[in-house]
Figure 1: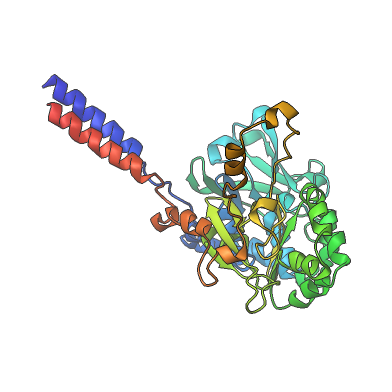
Figure 2: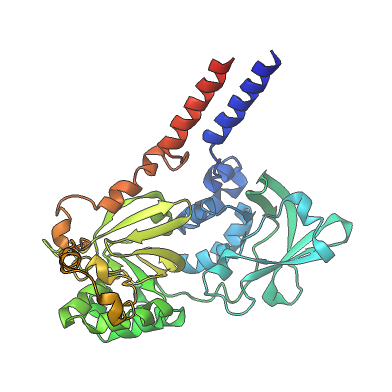
Length: 417
């Protein structure tokens, strides 16, 4: 009987390891919908696309303001893009539950915000000062206010430790930087924005190409740009210079998509995406693949990861990526990351029989991933493989072999009994 109990316990433990429980996600819209006093704040979280960004964060604190506080902000008649900056200052990139607010180390903390994460806040203007005051009060103020704390903690609204904390503060946090007029994304100087945020080489290359006009012409109707960082572009320039003029234009346009794709959309969808370089029979597409908060762009040649967000405001989104996207229409797979040539062998090492030399000479080369290798109407093999996990809804991810081995182990334990 004791042996059977041990076996059952082992089976249970093995089952839990094979079938882990799904991780529950938070939804800020649903949380605030239960509290009508925050309906205006909730509405603008959706309108500014901040809601999906909050939902995609694993650790977050939302400092909500009631309808009266939001009306004071709206009376300033700010643009929707400026309102987003202001509300972003109320979203802290750390967990501050009601209990933690009264247990802050040394009584004060400087919390980074979603406004600071956009890169639009110079210096410390994107941080919020949180101070535990006497009498059980907790004050909040923008770091730029030099210790002035105009808002007070009112109450905790809802907490999912240590995932999301929604708290109420007494008033909107005043910030001249956040409230500064923000131009419409379609009227922004796209290359200047990219150049100022780590994509200078790509921006300067784009300015020298007809592709720059293609980007500008699509900005009003919807545009998503995937901008390689400076290090990636510098390492790629030798390959870029070897392309024809048409090839250079196509490669640059390959980094733009003629529709607006928010980060939330990219994180929730997998699939083939056409680009500004796509023209009829010319495919010039790539695969968007996500794994949790990580989004990758896969060509037949290279896989790049989205590393940051410069702009995510309809109709324009600009994301930074860690590699240059190389379309299969311009490159063979062997050109992607070709290893350095091996050093020349010594004469003695070359001495081999004519038979073995002939066999080595005719050895079939590794097949290059050229356009002819891929069916024109079907997804790439890489995509077919990568979507296997997505059929599970992004929740449980484990290999079939592991499950089979686990099940066989369970039966074996019972047979022993």
